[in-house]
Image (cartoon, rainbow, N blue to C red; front, side, top):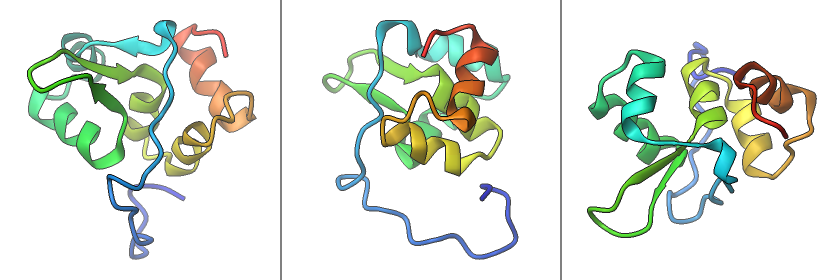
Amino acid sequence: MSLFDDDPPAPQRNSSAAWPILMRADDIINLKAAVHITGRSEKTIRGWCRQFGIGSQACPGGPLEISAPALEMVRHGDVTALELLREGKRDHPRVSRYFDHLGIPT
């Protein structure tokens, strides 16, 4: 499954119903780093965070904490890996390859 498939997307979970991606300190990057890594705008990264639930903000106006592996998954259109990460399956080969790519221990 890819974000860029021609097939109609599966129904998206309501953002309040989607499980958060649990992040360890080594997984987290800030908005500035996400922009630098991806070459995308802050607006795009913020949109991805809302749409795919790959970031969190403790309170309004607080810093945005973004899951670096999840960001890479979204960047590459790998929804399957993103859902496996959301389920906590960090050791799954499809998920662990992103951690390996980023040099982050699973």
